[in-house]
Length: 413
Image (tube, rainbow, N blue to C red):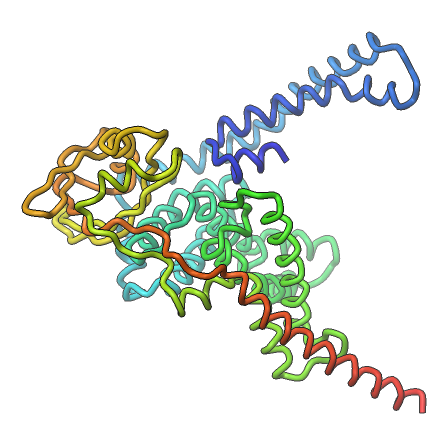
């Protein structure tokens, strides 16, 4: 829980998140026997703490042994990662995916998912994640930004990781399918095909991670928001399962299954319909970027539209989100984001770039023009679309329960 909290809620680095999770585990192991003694009304605290210390020492030894296999897999995967970094194949893959997709965002994500499936075949879980995330996560970030999709990096990693893990049940390799077939004594290829068929039903979920990051508890500031997201998502998953299985309160008709899928989609991503009515962002002139940065709340980010010519001579036009840090003057907060600017005849250009800063990591370069500052538009809450979804759901429930009673009456007659 602590690891997930630090990664997804606090957005801390993987190393720091793992450190605090490990510290908590050590504390639990040290005190678990003493805690049990309290409930059992045993008062030998010293002996209980000794037992806890022995558990911690044994845990260190077991962890070291288990890390041998992970270390070998990580080292082997590091060869691939190093090859990608040194040869520039990552940029080639970005250009390849962009070329065959024609710049269409959904096609970009679909092709990325297919490549993640292919890359994940035959690899153990740890090496699978390292290879797939190293190759494909930058692809989604760069091409998504070029298409106006700004998502947290954790969501991108979960997207490619999901499809990388699905490779374990994807024929013709399907390591997990072969293992399951060996246990059950069935045909490995048939097992893989059935497992792949059932797994593909949930292939829509990683796309929802990107388009609705609230499902990952990102951007939720109030406990009530968390409760709403959890409850609505649970209902949506049940509806999605009912739609794909063709049975809700009774056997569903084709139009009822389609309606249930529509309801599940609306509950998972209500912002889709709101975006069709009102755009999520409005553009402010870039000339006010200093004032806008100064007026934004502390520890927030600024969303910019930029364009320019890369060092390779390619035209670049994309949106980037840069962290502004604590409250300060506009110039200082922009410098915290990694850029210094200049104004030439009412046009704003990047004049300074902090080495290894957020802006440079986002792919910005000297003399890129900032064309607009994007701010969230004032529009209705997206949850308003839950109302027609639940009304339609209620109508389907009434129809199916009525049909079920009729079928039961005929069966008993």
